[in-house]
Image (cartoon, rainbow, N blue to C red; front, side, top):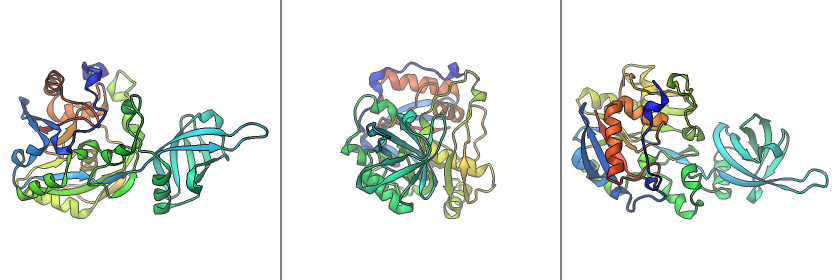
Length: 349
């Protein structure tokens, strides 16, 4: 497979800079069956589209306010240096890997001071990342980062506007429980308490997994030969109760429909190591491309993804590349909104 196979034209003005309000008013493109039959709906129609006995699987990760601004103390007679830090992935209760700008002004042993007494020592430095050892740990560190930082909105939004307090709520799903992500599992952003209540009344079940999303989700594929791409690793967790609920649902004829690609990647990673599905806790770098055999996901609710991205490859694996190219062409023609704050599609192969 070539990277160019997954390219498509996307007008820049279709990139959503703010979410729909209310959240469940976002548009929904339903793509059904091997023929890829298309249907234009809205998110709040989900209880009428899904079947009694289906199970939705949400990612309950919580996004930290992981964009930090700090200062490195002056050396000798020089001046203090302002350092922008974007956390990437947690390494221990007190340590994170991070991207720092200007990285060339940092060296191992330096201390970066943030507000409210939060500081971090540069424990190690690689070409693109630094390892930061903070003076807080665990939940105390999470609270300090939330107090000191800004919401880490995606780069294709941040390049057009600055993050603000509205993003603090807009970029967090109502499923958020387990702190650890630096990017939101954005398909979950479409849900409201009213929608969840209506889904429950329609006897659509729900359970959770956890995958802590890191900044690698925004990394482009650089190799024209797709098989040469190596996925970033992210920490994923599926507990036994959720695994049992999914197994029971599917055994009874219900469908397992992940809410977002992060939930799907967690389930498929777990399914690769156990049949029937069982508890799983590990770093996953699963890379799903056309030809992949899905073991547990019977559908997918997801946003519209970037051209030539690993996520467009994933949805093409589920529905077929020709079907997804046609679906995305329809979405562009009908002015659906793309990416993190955009509209969604429900894929039912």
